[in-house]
Amino acid sequence: MWDNVDGSWQPRGGYITSDAKPVLNPFNPGFIYTSVRGGDGALWSNALDTDSNTATWRGLGGFISQDTGTLNKGNPAPVVDTNGFIRTFVRGGDGALWDNAYDGTTGEATWCSLAGYIISDPNAIRDENGKLQISAKGSDNSLWINNLNTNQGPMANWNVVQEGKLVRIAYGSGVNYPEYAAFYLDSSYFRMNYGPDSVWGTSVILFPSFWKNGYQQRRVEEKEPILYGWKTEGTDLIMPFMGWISGLPVAGNIRINPPNSNGLSAKVSIKTYGDISLDNKPNEAFKPVMLSSMHISPDIWDAQSAYVNSQVYSIPTADWITYPAVTGDRFGLKGGTSTLKVNSPTIDIYLDRSLPITGWVTPSTNPYDNNVGFWAASDHVMDSWQYDITAKKA
Image 1 (cartoon, one colour):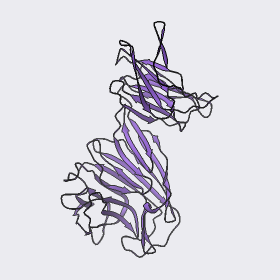
Image 2: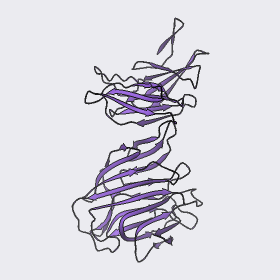
Image 3: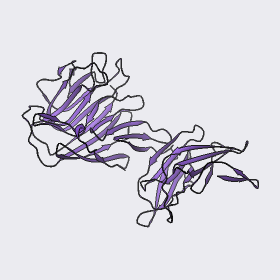
């Protein structure tokens, strides 16, 4: 990249594959920030110190799509918001509009998808009210405009990133996106915490498990990963998913509400299609939802106790947690602080009906072993059910 200073051309290094898009940031005067698409397809920022006439490159990651001979030339669209973040809008590799919030002072940057499908480079301005107006050509050849209000700080929103068979779910704004949930596409484990002060603990197993032909069928043994998608609806994150477990088709939906002072909550709805022959296993034959956790000893645990409705049960080092099963519509595993972890979350399940609740502890000395199972049960294959999950401080 080259720039012209007082009539003299100056080389700034790098390798760019788009137009250079400079902005001035009133929160950090004395610097010119230029956004470009690099030779690797990622977003890069060049910070030019106008006093020393020195420039520094910083890679911001991501991938900017570029289609030769179309309106999608891979050009980024930077604009400075009312909080001093450089917000650069691009067309991602999935065709959606993506937002990069970059703090030029600290060097921190965060990506967030704004969804949609565009077929041109985006353009962005900040209007007189502080709103960011992003325009682009949609797949229907119409002009589409996305409005972001940054007057009250960077707009809080969801950020979903898949890494292999793990889907990471974060919520925040600007460059602050703490991770609140994680969805494992092999096992259907779904983990939630109540905020940045919380660690990971108990997991919810979204897919049902059941006994068939003398064996317990679990989603982790399936070869094909779970299919999923995501979108925002108002302030909520919606994640539909589908897959199979031992020949039984399963489809579901997760609606996650934005985190608040009480923690994080989500509503899960599940449907199965078809039927299978279950083994005769009272209170184990079919488990529509199960909590998986760790309790090695009174001092080493993710879950310190269990409960069904208002009744609390201690967790043994081995054997049944509740026997016989207790009928209820609410159950959970209480977290807290042990010698292993600080602030593991309490995970609460509120069913749409009363079901038998029971659980089992397998003896273990491995603190990274999920040796606790606590579940709702049915003696037949349920065709549909719903429940609410809450991750909260113990």
